[in-house]
Length: 108
Length: 526
Image (cartoon, rainbow over all chains, first blue to last red; front, side, top):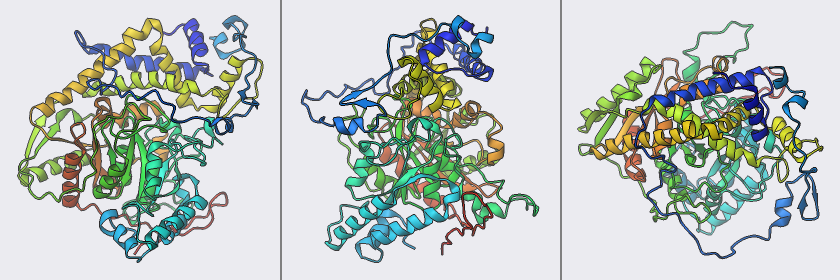
């Protein structure tokens, strides 16, 4: 089954990355097909494994401040800043809906 | 001659006795980097700071107070490790111009022991790939392409053809690091290994590539691909050197909560003479489709080598091997989707000029900053993480992961000490041939023998074994039990001694390029 345009659009929105062209979509289709091989494996009664270190206790350290005060260093790599703030364009403006967009997906 | 010896046995002694100085070593390596520029192994060469570090090391040697074996030793680091004050790009437009504000723990450890950081090596963009061909700075060339051994086996080209259109790839994604070590421009290099990214190029470039147990070496500062599988990798010219590097890097790091707390004791490798107590497992599933008959024969020969020396050699089964690539594909893309979310242009890296809204700026930044491979994996990953797919794909893959890890547990529990497998299916492919297939297909093919060790978190090492019919390196892989690096490396060292892998004979290279490279001679080594 092919992935619907709605899902493709949803993915672009979630990932904030675009498919760009039919090759991109084809790539996803192939990836899904490839992943479907997983269903050949019988995993009844098998617990998911998050980490190979699951049998060990996670290290917890003392709640002491050991580093910080590096605002200047960290701001150095940002392109747009004001005083100690990173500057972003206005938020709360959603990306255009599928119908409103002039993307490749519209045509598919 | 000191350039060719082992760190512990020869180079360290030479430095201590003053037969060679850290500055000389550094200068020689820097000169070699310049003359082998066509390999494109380095993205950034930190000449000034390297010379400064070399000078400081020299002062210490003069005072008779070197910090250790690594003091004054030139090393290179893959460009996905943060290095303070030095650009860290991950071979991506997204991080071009990004100057790290800190050192990755492994980098800091090297520097603390006096190592001289020559520069950052080339890779596939964000370590996604198995050829070191998909970074924005171009592909890395395998130094063996310019070796006497390869050239005498090549079909002679006609006058009119570009004489090096048949150069071969390094493998990946740590190709730059492997090429750097292989071409003698450094003594050791750091790579990373998520699906085989250290072992694969090690095999193709004829160097030792060690993937340590997950949790042994800190990932703090290693720009993550798959947090549950990534490890820093070690590339050296001999197994002893890998042990030296491991000794200086392993151990708990409070800044990386996935490092184990067990105390790590650095070790020297014994010279094993008696292998009769050893049990070597040969996993039959590693006779994978596409395995070249040459490598199959070499693998068989190696098994016989152990048998004839008195070791117990048994065939074993890891039944879920063939699903490790599919499993990896899902888990990797899912973790990538998450890990790449941090690149939005606000705090660091590339930022698009689009300013209508935050989201449109993020989207444009990511479109401009990431290549197709990265974007493809992000989209796939997001697909597998959708609510309607989460159980079906992501959780399913986590279950299959356990099955793969359990396969190894069962085999090691049955009395096998070490597994012996091929590292790659073939010797290095010519670049022109390699790029005929897309990145994902290539990765799926090439990672098949290395990926499962990442899935299970086990230590594994590539040991250069012999030259193929084409005159190119072929390596074999040893996989050990968790945190049993000493045993793994001891066996690897024994094997290395038996096979006596030949040294690369780099030829003089004349180039008639008008573009980037001038008429060059590669250094001759005698």
